[in-house]
Image (cartoon, rainbow, N blue to C red; front, side):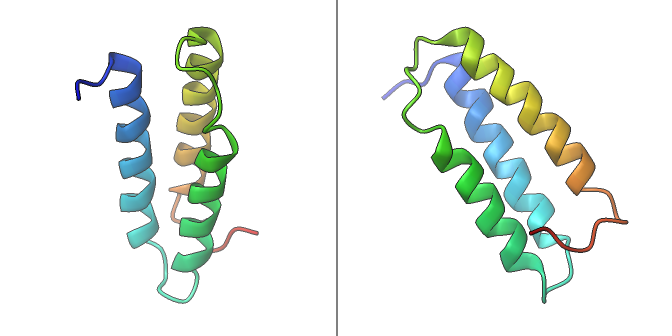
Length: 77
């Protein structure tokens, strides 16, 4: 199955999120992984042709990743 460009971007963002989770303290790592998974699952039903919504969520996700990947962020709730 071939993936569209947007689908590749979404998968890439998800992998980046999981990579950043591994950098967090082991006691809090699960919180970050659960949060990332929930954020992606919340939007799984968006139509793959709704490009504006997907692009918006990608921008939002990248901003969140940038904030949460900061070394000063120790936990997420």
